[in-house]
Length: 366
Image 1 (spheres, helix red, strand yellow):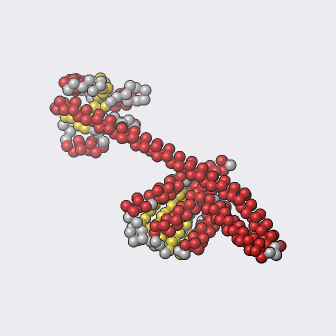
Image 2 (cartoon, helix red, strand yellow; image 1 turned 90 degrees about the vertical axis):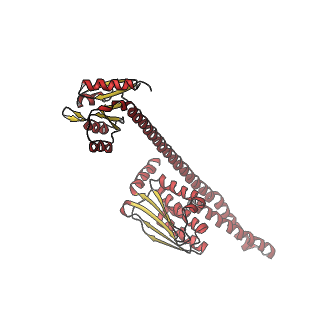
Image 3 (cartoon, one colour; image 1 turned 45 degrees about the vertical axis):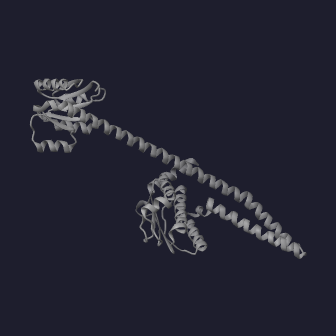
C-alpha cells in the first residue's frame, strides 16, 4: 500500500497517538493529520488543500459529533471513506451511522482492527470510483452515439429530399415531356400498327411517371409541407388501399411542430405500418395523434398476433431500435406494449419543449 494521507478528527491527543501506533503496527504507511474542531476539519478539506485518502473521526467531540462532520463532507460533494473510530456508542447509533453512509466503525478498544477496516473501505471506495467513471464514460459514449445517429439521420433525410427533387425536376420533367410528345403522335398517326406502339409507349410512360411520383413521396413526402395530419391522412389512405387493411386515424394537432419532428412522427407511423404488414397478421390498425399535456403523442395499435420478448429481439429488434433512436434524436422516447395474441402498440412521445428547441435550431440553420 502506498503512503496514505489520512485526516483524523479527534480532540484527545492520547487517542490520536494510539491510533497512529495501531496503523504502524498494521504496517500502514500513512501521514495522519490531526484536527479537533469542525472548523479545522472543514478548512483541511477545503479546495486548494492537499487531498486526503480517508477520514477517521471520533463520535463524541467537543460541542459536536462525528456524524455532523460526515454530513458536511457528504454535502460538500467529497467522496472519501469515512470511518468512525470511537468509544462504545451502541449498536443503534452504529446502525444509524451506516444507514447514513458512513463507511465503517471501529471501537477504540479494538484499534488492531483499524488497518483491515481502512483497507476494505479504501478498496470499496476505489471500486465505486471505477464504477462511476465507467458509468460516466458509458453515458458519454451513448451521447456521442446519439449525436452520430442524429447527424446520420439528418444527412439521410437531406439526401432523400435532394434525390426526390432531382427525380421531380429531371426524370419527372422528362417523362412528362415524353408523354406529351407521344400523345401528340397518337393524335396524328393513321397507321394502326404504329398507333398501337405509340399507345403502348404512352402507357409505359404513364407507369414510369407514376412510379417516379411514388418514389418521390416515399423519399420526401411533399404532403408533409401541409402538416403532419395531412401527411398521415395520405399515408394511411394509400396504405389501406394497397393492403386492404382497415386503418383508422384519429386526433388532431393544435401546436406548430418543427419539420424534423414531423418527419420523425411520419417515419414512425410509416415503419409501424410496414411492421404490421410484415409481422402482425392484423386486420385493423388504429392511429391516435395528440399534442395534449405538453407532449406530441402518436400511438399505433394493431389487433394482430402480438409478440413475446424473444420474438421482438429476433424479428423486429433493428426496426424498433431505429425507431427508438429516431425518437431520441428529437428528445422523445418510444414505448412498446405487446403480448402474444394481444396485438402490439407503439407509442411515440416527444415533449413539445423539445419541438420548440428543434424549431429554433432549424430556423438558425436557415
